[in-house]
Amino acid sequence: MKIPFLSTPDKPLKVASQELVPVIYITDGIAFYKNGGAAIIMESTSLNFGLLSENEQEAVISAYAGLLNSLSFPIQITVSSQKKDISSYMTYLEEQQKKIKNEKLAHIMDDYKNFINEAIKKKNVLSKKFYITIPFYPYELGLGKSFALSMFSPNQKKDTALIPYPKAYVVRKAKISLYPKRDHLIRQAARLGIKLKQLNDEGLIKLFYNVYNPEPPVKTADDDF
Image 1 (cartoon, rainbow, N blue to C red):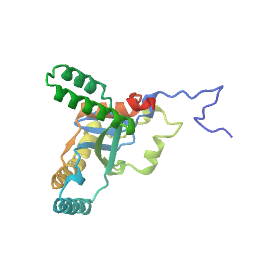
Image 2: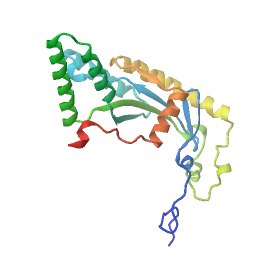
Image 3: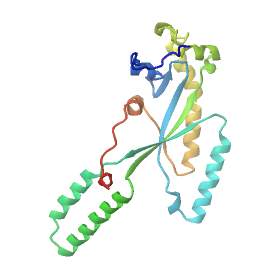
Image 4: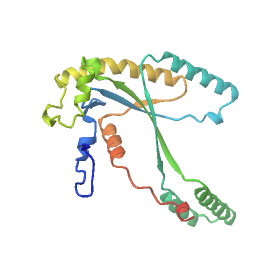
């Protein structure tokens, strides 16, 4: 029995990376998919819950519960973590230390640099970004499940793998569905002290590029231990 798309030593898998990307185009801050769906992606600020007072924590929990109870549509929360290179920061500290004339302040700077180096050895320094995705499904255009499945059929021709509606119509329907949901989330998140910002076309392109072309981990001091 032959399994389609199976890579073997004598027949390596050859698929263009573009074929694996579900996004067909991006416009007006909305990513549109090959199966007729779409999505708005918003970047979120973070909140240090542990630094809040007990009353503030209770208020945040109450506001978060209110946000969850107010949802009448699905969302996806994604956290992107990446090793952070602080070599430029350490270089900056070295340069600033050379300008220090006070001997005591110079010793304090040495202690601070040692503290940073020890912290790196014990734990990776990570940069985190938070995203909330609001989806728009193909059935909202009137497309059935069979059409969505046909988009991934091995026999489906590339030139026919397009939704049977004009682009302007799809964009309009997606905006009508997604914009009220976006505005609702922004208002609810503000009660938590969190700001949501919709990614524009350039931001979406950069995000998807980084997802499918991840940078190699940055070497930090703890890699040698």
